Length: 251
Image (tube, rainbow, N blue to C red; front, side, top):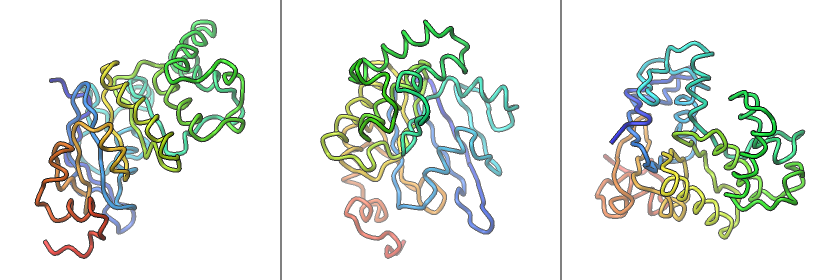
């Protein structure tokens, strides 16, 4: 199986705070990998580091076998075109319509002509069940759940090898959350896209996960399948699953 993302011994310090202290993970082609851990532990920093939005202090990051930690901005952007991102707040452009948001990366990232870009954008919006009468609306005119689906369509539009999901169901009702999870699972199982997801929602994890890693004290301290998550004797994982503060655990 081919590695799509391989991070090795990533370290990142902000001031005196060591956020990443030797994080390593390996995501395979067509795999859904979920990172869990307490709030404020550095999960978003990990994703942003892999995406090049935050520069790590040391360590290796390979995307599609290309070392990206020392790439120029131009070469890094070319690699990032093989990635899709769904940020926690959807991060749509407020001044653009739904279909313009989805077509944006095709027009300005892949230099496609507008006619082709809008055709592809429409196909992706269909795939995430956004009706045509919504395409010309602005993000402020649609619900939070719709915004997440539009953001997923935008992430899919450039045909990425991997999509990064930062708390994709935060703030959504259970029904909409399940719908978003179903779309994430579809990306992996039907399209063969790899996924790296940050979530604190165990119901969401159960619906999308192949493997899960727990981030704590700057490291992935445990890794296994979603079934193993509930049977492990690792005290930190057990506390997280049971909803108990991890700081109280004695190693």
